Structure formats: C-alpha cells, structure tokens
View: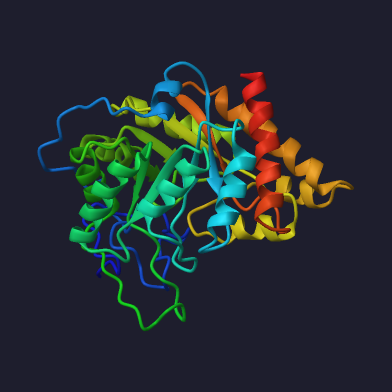
Length: 333
C-alpha cells in the first residue's frame, strides 16, 4: 500500500470512517490494524517566540479565527469581506482547496493587510515543490503574515484539473518544521474524529515536536469529543494552544459543504434542528454560538475557528453571519 500524497508523517485528516483513503477505496497505509504514531525522528527546531498577534492574544483571552470564504481572483471582493469581518475576529484564515484556486499566498497576505485584516495563510504541499514552498515562506515574511497553517493538502478530486500534476514533495509535518525554521508562527491541523482516532492525540504531539505553535482542529460531533481529545493530547505532552472548529451554516448548501468533507463530523440532529427552523439564519447563528461557548469552556481550548461558508447566498452574506457570531463571542469573553 502507498499513500497518494507520499506522506511520511501520516495519516492525513481525510481518512474515512472505514480507514480508506479520501481519494478512493484504497486502505490508508497509516490507519490499518496495528498502526502506530509516526514519531518525529529529527532534531526538533529551537523554540521561538514569533511576533504573532493571534498567539499573543491567545495567552490573554479566547481568540476567534474566522475562515475567509471569498470568490477566486477577486481583490475587491476580498477587501470587502475582510472589511466586514474587521473587529469580529483576531485573524482570518485563508484556505487552499483542491477545486478552488486563488491568488498565491504571498499576494493574499498582502491584500488582506491592505484591507486592514490579520492573515493566517494556509500553505499546502499539493501544488508546490519544496523550492516554491521556501519561496512562499520568504515572501510571506516580507508581506507580514501573522502565521501560516501548514497542511499536506487534499488530493485533487478525479476530474478536477487532470492535466495538472500533484507534487507532495513534503507533507504538512515536514512543512511545519520548514516554516518554523523560517521564523513564522506555525499552526497545524488535526482531525480528532478521523480514523484512526486513537492515534490522533499522539500525532498532534509529534507535530508540536516538529515546530508547531498552534493546533487548529477539524469539526467533531460534540464538545465532549474535543474535551476528550485535548485531555488525551495533554497527557501525551501537548503544550501548544488549541483552536476548536465551530460549524457555521445557515442554509442547506452551507451545511452540505461541511458535511461532505471526509474526516469531518457534524451532529446530524443539530443540522436537522437548524435547517428545520422557521428562521434558519438565526437558528444557525444561535447553534454556532452555543457550540462556541461549549468549546471555550474546555480546559486547553484557547479559541474557536468560525468555519464554513456560513451562507449559500454569497461571500458577503457569509461574512455578515460570521461577523455577527464573532462579535457576540468577543462580547461574552
């Protein structure tokens, strides 16, 4: 068995519940019977204190990191959404999806800064070799990015740009080390509900050893699962702050986008409750606020990530939903 992402420090967060690959029915080589955590077997990078406003704030109070959902290659739309979110969050998280290309990370960081936002930019290993990743890290430092989220990246789905090669020179853990050594504040993802669940706490600890300063979790079905995961991680030596995901959806389309991600779990009863409400928008906002409060009450959770489209009515409608939630979380903190 081989990993289509050529991962060394697997498994990724997209392993399905039956331990198969996110790409097709092949079994994940890191998730079979007898699988163990792949240890970081290299010299850990020297501890650093990067100048990140998000990390500094997380030492004082709960923080809000908000997904930046915007149309591709639209600088005006990016500026408008960033402006709408201003004041409602500590930073915006720029994603990098296999079916949704956009400006390069360095330009994204510069545009967000121009619009008055604080950017945490996702760097994925799918489309860039090691040299280009090094170039992006150098450029992001000049652009003044607040931090980088280092991921292996989704495999491109069948039928999505079949004419384009996929690189995977590095995986997300190796990229985290590279970003740390380049002086960045480094976040890494983890998927507590993805198979094999028993390895996920130990895997996050190995990412910490590779140089991570912050963990950003994928969605899980309940706050109790997050509490169990964080406690298990702490027992194994996790010290970095954890940001837990809040699912933000106010209609069927925005809920389906979250439900369709492998390795990500929402509570189906809560989704049904929101979508069946008379005022779905208000119900979705209240459900997100309830989830945020439950997550922020967990020892070791330093903040929340307002994640998802939030609305199927366009980027600005989604930004308005997330801005309302973010303002209310910060008022309650």
